[in-house]
Image (tube, rainbow, N blue to C red; front, side):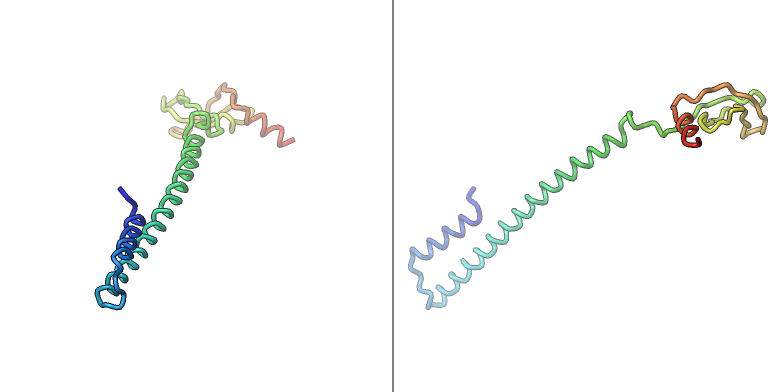
Length: 137
């Protein structure tokens, strides 16, 4: 299929070949129609060019978004930096989570359900506690 620009050029050539008299009303009308068609063809070309540029930019943004999603949602980055563990209260048998990194040297926790205090023997394995202790010194 020929482009719009080529079709308008063909019409211009056809009008020139027919030697239309631009002094007659019909000649003036046909010349004006061809000029308007040429303007439309130029506008359509401009819109197509702009659309292609926008499409390229959208593809680049889409790729950037995929990279961000990969970083955010990958398993490698799932660790939220805390050592949460679920423990069971020996008094009420309810389970709750504690952050092992936030425990003092006493390793005593209080059950949020019944208020019972009891000792736990759990070590921080993420390394954050060691970093915090070094920063305090």
